[in-house]
Image 1 (cartoon, rainbow, N blue to C red):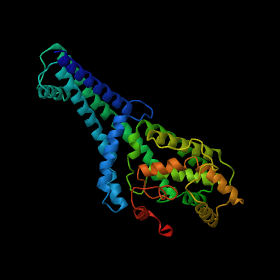
Image 2 (spheres, rainbow, N blue to C red):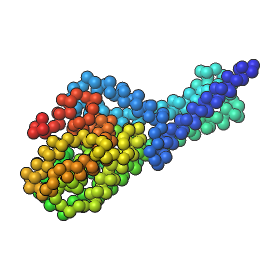
Image 3 (cartoon, rainbow, N blue to C red):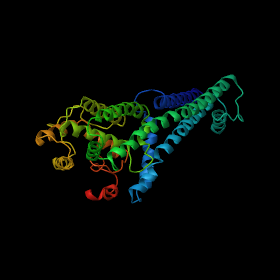
Image 4 (tube, helix red, strand yellow):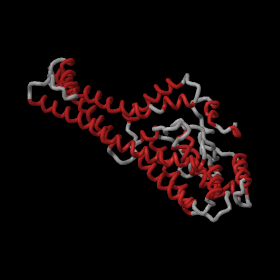
Length: 368
């Protein structure tokens, strides 16, 4: 008898622990307004990522893989509340059995009926009835919480993608920092660049807030396969870094603030996914992924387009590396994590889990 009571007590405590853990996971994922990496949510997304990585393995084109990966985040997001409900159902099954509501099968039947508010199975004592009401309340609360946050997720996605789409007009497709500077110089001159930095500084601020509190947003892919929030961020940051280091214009403080807002946002998002980086990098201690030859080629292309360039190229390279080193590692890591499409100086140099030839599918002919 004491052994039986101990087993029932253990089952009750196990069920209670699963309920608390599941509720904490739901609150951390959708309610807490800060970037907290929840263990259960992370396990679900990692498991689904392995499945999707296996599915795309035989696909030989980037567009084909992008088409499959475009449903990864939405499908996983829909599976997440199902996992929560299954755990709640199993937890209450343990509790009903511990309270003496028949066999495991009968306890599971009562749990399922209560969780889904079907009402075809009910206990006959007050304590179990109270437990039934609590399970029904939790089930409805989890579904309501999930439904309530879907508009928030898609609203943030829409605002993010509006800026990414607009960048194609200024920076081409795939986006390029050199192309952005050339187009702006031809159309506007550099007098109105301050507006661009202000716009993208606000974009980075919102990106940090939304993509850390709702980490699933990082995996929502753009409507078109050649676009990505990661490559857009890298293009804007590289544009600002080139303007601050190599282009012969007065130093724009808004550009400096934009770069800082950008690398701070990318670092906080990287923290959420446990990506390691040096928080205080310098050009003396850490190399950037952009080579000197690539910088010189960009310098010459800009000069050839009539863009006024600084006289001291050596100092320009050192200054550019000093800006780039702040976001180089996290930018490439996030591009790899999200399987970003090709973009120069961003996803063209990352350790992609795909063949290099697949990335080159989107490369301009001049760069192949």
